[in-house]
Length: 88
Image 1 (tube, rainbow, N blue to C red):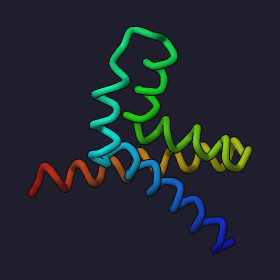
Image 2: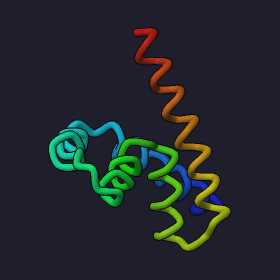
Image 3: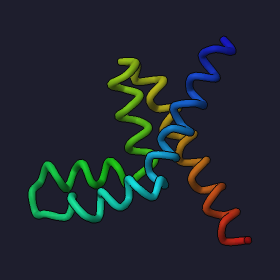
């Protein structure tokens, strides 16, 4: 049970790190700005913690329930950290 909770937390943290990591943002801005629909979807995936957390976890584990929990936790983590950034 503890292993399951830790894996969910690690997926949510990974989603937040991928979305906020500056080198990934730079690649996104430089290469993923064309009008192609696939490129636009990848850009959306890499810019949203909820989306990335859900799809990464779904592909990695194959469990929709786990992916939904990670999506919720990634959203909460993203909102809390952005709130802390604005207060500082």
